[in-house]
Length: 338
Picture 1 (tube, rainbow, N blue to C red):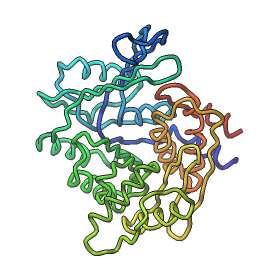
Picture 2 (cartoon, helix red, strand yellow; picture 1 turned 135 degrees about the vertical axis):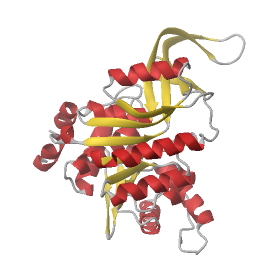
Picture 3 (cartoon, rainbow, N blue to C red; picture 1 turned 30 degrees about the horizontal axis):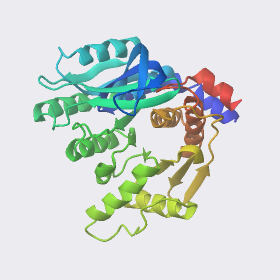
């Protein structure tokens, strides 16, 4: 435990670049007192509204909350879009460096609205453009990446499938980060798994890992991916899938998050199940963002993959005990470990 604490105290020395899809999260908070006479749905008496930069920006928020320096790299919509303006104001308050963020005229910034009644999410409404982002924007983004990669200790790729991280850009980012010997961790989108070869670690949840098996089997032309079972219900299923994906994608490590069952870390020649330490669970929204943030920061601080996974597990155990997309900090993390 002393070694974990020593690692956490070095979080504030790290410099992280987060590349990915940018989303504005809106929460409408209220209470339910009756059912609508128009349809069998609850009527929410709205009392307040909050906004927060989400998607890849929530990972950046987690990193900033841990005291590290973080720069965001991605694409927002038109500068005149109210969601774009709200996103920028929120990022500034969270001490997120926006130098790598570009704007595309004619595109809307993705807006996700969650309606919360008491402690329960009632519904989510999404407004977004998912068409492909222009070649010019992607070229400018990659040029920023190439010009600045040496300034950072690690790159986190956050793929939400909103049109930014196509296979070409993703592969180029991983390859160029590898040339500079930088840590690359990825929160994956299952239909892009074959783009993640040679990463330091990818961190899917159980459902994403199941979908990845299906996707990689379809993409595998050489018949090398020999996993027939897609549903990861037993420990044996998880171990077979984790070892196969690790080898097929030539990863340094592979971390499957399993909700109330903790997480499972795979490295070449070994695997380790890490039970959850969550004391109570209110909301799992954003827990994966906390996992990849804490895991990456720990690696930057000199942790082994296993030490990093234990630290990420403690961090996730804290945030799922909070309502809404939440973050934690080094003080809370050290107290939980103690």
